[in-house]
Image 1 (tube, rainbow, N blue to C red):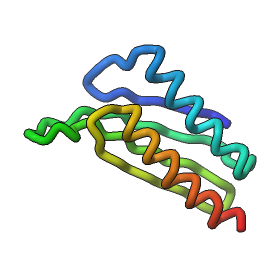
Image 2: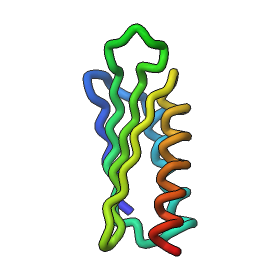
Image 3: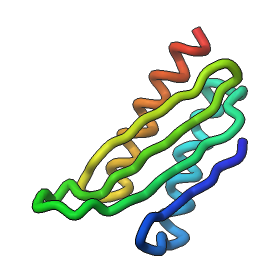
Length: 94
């Protein structure tokens, strides 16, 4: 599986990149046909503390999956995105 990570208007550190990659690679245990994932990490200008945004587009043959979440940290948002994608992968694989 290919993983492309785009950090928009900031430089993500290697720990965050490794965390995102590890979360996405876990999805392969549910469906090993996932071909690629494109990740967008962004900080939104807002008064809310939940200003970290993670978007993931995943491609499975015949279907594109997408999840987007806001949270107080990128790790928390990535946890939620990974869970949303896991549910989608399970539906596609069923």
